[in-house]
Image (tube, rainbow, N blue to C red; front, top):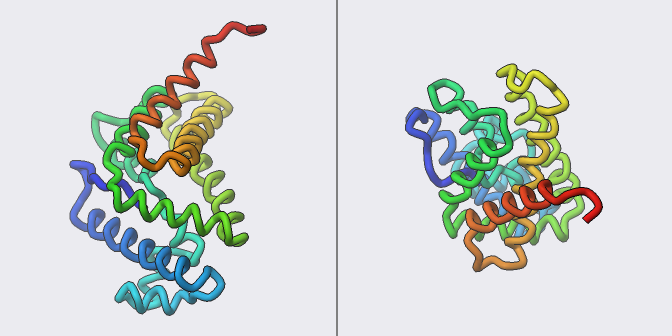
Length: 205
């Protein structure tokens, strides 16, 4: 599940790829919900999405990856911005501001798909394990982008920034599942503010 909006720097080809990725992922989620994860094949997903098996594997490496397509495209947006003057600074405020902006573009339909995914993760062991691995991989990819830009120089700082960014996003999504009527962007900004207050609290209090 990608971000609803598209960056001004995004090409037509990138936009089409993003749309096709989202469409295949949505079909996969629907079939998993109807038939179960183990009861759904890649061929069935491809057929229902109107693409070939080969096309499916051009977009996803596995059924798990199709289900776990990101709600917001943090990596893609970081890469697009790195090509221009609006590159994302390697600071927690900059990374959380980017995440909040992308969450503000998520549509109600995308959130319905995410709610379906969460139901599936609760009942499908294979998806639960894949979701944990996916979260770690996302943090690692953000970290590698920061290190590649040589900002910050400290690789441990890059790890902390990346993992904190992902943890804040995941905590917000977990909370949203219990309060689906809440505004996702507002909830995320509140999570960031709560972290700021916690960090500012003197030790021993």
